[in-house]
Image (tube, rainbow, N blue to C red; front, side, top):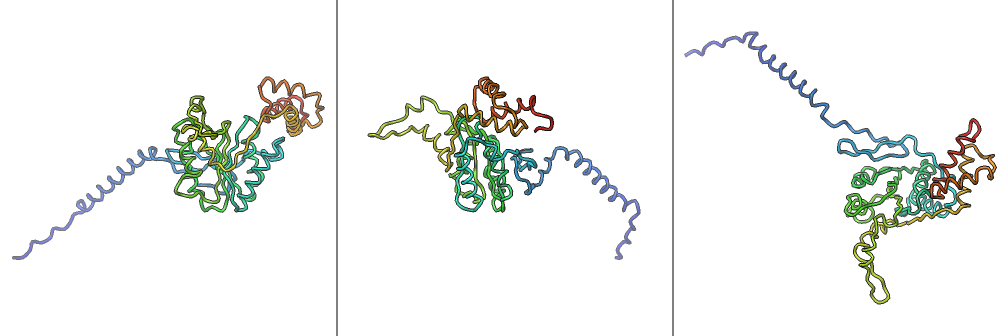
Length: 307
């Protein structure tokens, strides 16, 4: 029996699937347009030519934000902390030369140059490949990711956390402790951690914890709470301590900053009493207070064209 003749497809039959496809694509495009604002933004590309970075988070993801113009403080601007300066400079030069070097904890009196010293290192050794990554305490949980990101780079990175202190149970405490000396993964040779703190052991210490101390023969054994707090700071190989300035030191620092701000010709007797009163009002004779006084004095006394 002969097969029936095939019915030729009409133009309408051919057009119908095309119309459905066009409608589908239009609907999909409109849906994507509505979803696009909800999608996370692309993270900035890392600018490895920058001298310094801040670790930032966006939409739950971390990235290095380039700092095009770091703080201009120089090592020679930091007065009356020669011993501290010498020790951290030596450690940093070892680091840049590819020799063994230590993570550094700078502790002590507020305003005496701890963080300024780290920033000055960048300005001194930037051309020799030193880079600085500033990480807030709240972001220390990302330390393993940061270390992995810079491992293998030709530059040498100091991960810097300023004014560091912890309360019991904080995640950042555990992450820092692990990266310093407690992880199964070794830290690459091009990474060191420099941190500043007003607390020697980075955590508050309570009188009740001292009651756990025991005496065995002539030896004193701290309790478990004290041992736990000391264990973090001891993972920093180099401790550098800062102390309150004497009155003469404070005035010498003030004279340096007055010259920096264009008051080099100012006779000492014209500003000395004001500088001491300024420190008395602030309750501190620190480098920061000296710098603040010099700015105030220069603002009203510096000649035109001064800094």
